[in-house]
Length: 107
Image 1 (spheres, rainbow, N blue to C red):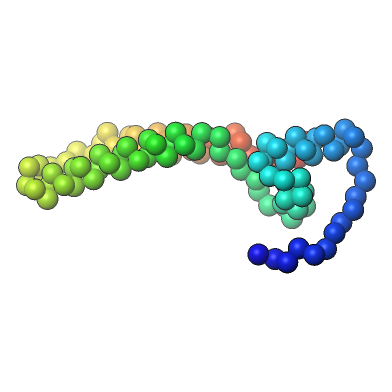
Image 2: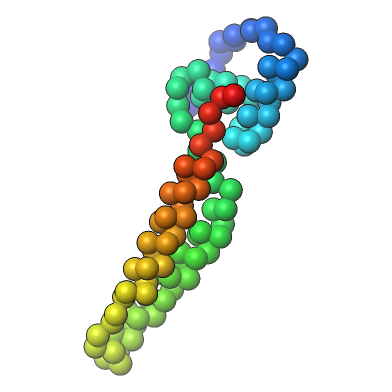
């Protein structure tokens, strides 16, 4: 991590400060980190529903692991993964839409 020893003082109006703080809060960042990120033209993405996506991906992973175990035991020979592919595709679309929706740009 870079040694942050330099300070920049700027003047803003009350309205501008409120806007900056609102945007920083939406980005789940401190005011300082938000301002540096924006000033360096870095993209800010906040995913609000990440826990639900992770839960669904975990369930899919568990199902695939169960199929793998059954295949190794010789209990199944052919696995149709169409349903899994559909679920993963749906999750991918959801994640993509969340990223597109939650991209934060300065007001």
